[in-house]
Image (cartoon, rainbow, N blue to C red; front, side):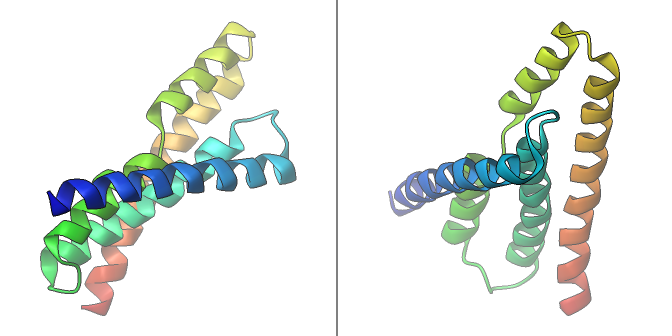
Length: 125
């Protein structure tokens, strides 16, 4: 039960963080490209690599907290569904090149930042 409550609480925190962080990014960069979704997904990718690596390689993050952070907070923060919708809208609007750039940038950047999160922990431990 403790794990479920931790996940639920941190899911809410992750969702609110996504709302404010992506909104802030859109305020700065505009909505011509899905910058806000890209930023939250890349940020989440870094931290899932970091938290999983640290949690599985050390005792710094107890299992309940690791699950709360990854399933809860990062699950609430990141958003594949919004990425999919925004990409579809770009395609529907005939902005095929921007849709392709969004797909390639999102996938490549998220993989890169997941790897950087893992490397960060491996370098420190």
